[in-house]
Image (tube, rainbow, N blue to C red; front, side, top):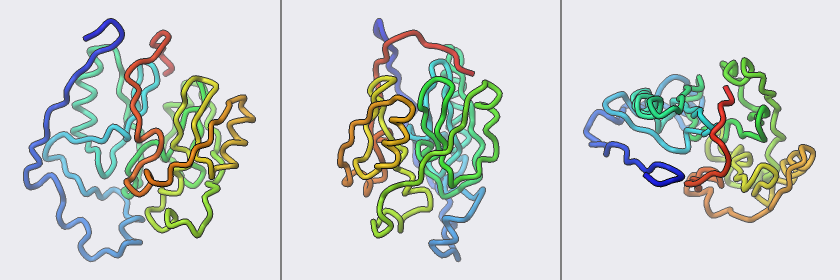
Amino acid sequence: QSTWGRWTQAPKPTLEPGLIDETYCDNMTKEERYKCTQRWVTTEKEPCWDAADFLRFGRDVIGQRSQATNLAGLEWLRRYLEPKGVRVHEMPMDLAFNLHIDVLFSVIGPGVVMVNSDIKFPDLSLFENAGWKCIPAPKPSTPHDDPVWNMTAAFPWISINTLFLDPKTVIVDSKETELMKFYNKWGIDTIPIKYDGTRWLGGGLHCWTSDIRRRGPMLSYF
């Protein structure tokens, strides 16, 4: 522990047989797997999660059940963090193909969240009950002949997987011209960069970074 944060280590997974449902892909085409809902390749054999399935909002963390994060993982984080004053909320989703929460929505600022406009969210009451505005994100500007469109149904929306340096400055994929215009309308300066290489390894700017120090008070937004 330091004067500005706390380091910890999650339990190491045993990766024993049974954690992965080896029948998951049986008798399903690629297209059917992407449309399949409420069927997960990970079981509840032991806690597992992916950091990119979680977003931090001051004293609150929002996470989701996905192909990489199971309910046992969500519960472990809840038991660990809540005694330390950080609440963990599950964002209900019915998209079994989805991996990372940061292709579903992205925070613009306190009280405003940008949501994937191709997704019908089962429940956004966590934001709505707290008075947040849920603003549809602009469609990805990535050309349709880009191979990224042939991956998962959610993958083109890696466009909203951006990285804020401060409340008024965000790093964006240089291809995403409409998204940069969107941010500018909200008074946010954009820094365009080219980072095609990271997408083929399954991540965007938010996925590939993790802040270890934040300035300012730890506020409660929900």
